[in-house]
Structure formats: structure tokens, C-alpha cells
Image 1: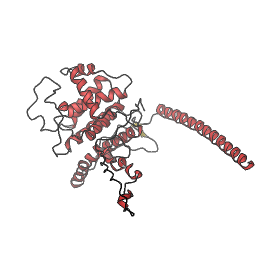
Image 2 (image 1 turned 60 degrees about the vertical axis):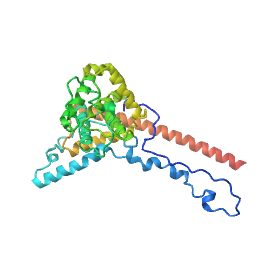
Image 3 (image 1 turned 90 degrees about the vertical axis):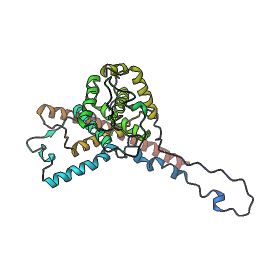
Image 4 (image 1 turned 180 degrees about the vertical axis):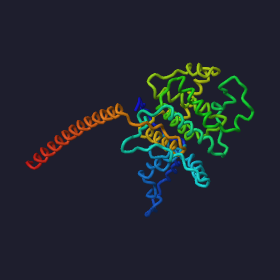
Length: 341
């Protein structure tokens, strides 16, 4: 799925190691207690499970950790369903198209080739829930992401710029403009969301009305360079956002990378998790991917792809069976040689 990079994955800054106590000097008593002999030390196998215990803090690193945006959206989704139930309004899911014996409906979005328009809509919705349901514990606001200190346009920033949450449509227009002008792919949008949540986790910050544009811009900038074969240069973004300077873009990219601890690796399992969680988010918010009836031409293409995969699987099974047979023969020969000795 694209040109994933293989970088060394650094541990999250949330992980903290306990300081080891100093060893006491040797005491020549006849009987030493259990504490003196060191038998109460934690076994190494217990200390190696730190990542498993803190997996919930690293959704962008571990495929089994739940994504932050999906958990933040659960409260709103439950309220919407409750409101529909109270007001006796049928949910939008009942108006969906379902396959029958004569017609099969399919969408054109897959994990390897997502639908660009609806993927951007889902990513914008995920960012919206991040901002709306952010923590209110007074987390710090980094200067590099503050739009008042680093404005994206020459127009005056309103004094209450950090008070009003942006609507989903506003976030969608901002992301769509960048993706359309830079000709980025749908896979890049998913990687953008991965980097955004990794930043929030590693730097321990929240995305809010004062910094959401520059955080999203930095995530898109980095994702386009890591994922796409023909990366967009920083000067190209300056042509899209007319009032921003190249020096500002370079500094944004540098600090974004430092906050990520230069961990830009996105495993295929993490990518797939974010893709399917975005689909779940779309399903819960009645933002279904467009369904089209299966045409004869597309059916032939799917059949051709199925046959190609089946042939590859058969070749794989033959090669695996051949390797297993050779291995068993070597084992038999080795056993015969040992019995002769």
C-alpha cells in the first residue's frame, strides 16, 4: 500500500522508566533477607510489557490501540441516536441502498485505493471531533502552531480567534483546498490523520481553534513527503497559501518532526486500522460512501483480479509445499544418520 518508509520507531514520551535504587554495600551476615539478596527485583519479562500497558496512549503506533478520534466521537453519536429515537425520526441508514438478487451495490473505496472525496470528508469529521471534544485541562499551546503568532494570511486575526470551534465544513474546505492544489492522494489523507494523533500523543497537546490549521498543515506537509512518490515542496505550499513564507514552512516542518521524535513510520496494520475506523465514523454519522450498482464491465474486472489472486495463491501453496517436503526429507536423512551412529 504505497511507499511506506521503514524508520526506527521511538517510544512515546509518555513512557517513563523508574529509577533503579543503588546497590547496598556488602554485609557479611550469616543470613541475608530476601530484600538483601535482590529476589524482590522485577523480572525482565514484566518490565518488557511497558508498551502493552501504555498501548492506549499510542494509537498511531500500535494496531490494537483504539484511535482517539473514534472514541471522541462516541458521545455525540450516542446523543444523535437518542435524539432520533425520542423524536421518532428514522435514521439515515434506513435510506441506504441494499443489494438484492438482481442488483449488487458496491462502493469504489478500498483500503488500498480509498475514495478521495469521502476520505477527506471523514478526516475532516475526525478533526472536528478532536476539536469539539478536546480536553479542557489547560494544556499548553505551542507557539509554532499558534495562528496569532504565525498567521496563514495577511488579514487581521480576530481577537476571539481561539474561542469559536470551526464547523466540519470549514475544516473540509481547508483540507480539500490543499489536497486539490497539491494533487495529493486519499492515502495521504489517512497518513495525515495518523501523524496528527501521533503529535497530540507525543507532545501532549490538544488541537483547538487557535492551532488546528497549522497542525493540519504540518501533518499534510509531512504526509505528502513520506507517502507520495513525487512530494510537494515547501515552496509549492507557499503558492497555495499566498501569505505564508518558505522559512515559516521549513520551521513548521522541523518542529513537527522533532515533536514526533522523527518517528514517521506508519505500519500497514496501523494504516488499515485508521482506514476502517474512518469508515466506522462515516457509518455512525450517516456519511456513507457512494454505492453504485455492479456493472458488467466491473464484474469482469473483479473476476479477473480474483483469478489473478487465486493463481498467485496456488503458486504460493506449491512453493510452500515444496519447501516443506524438502525440509522433511532433510529431517529424515538426519534421523537415519543419527540411528546409524
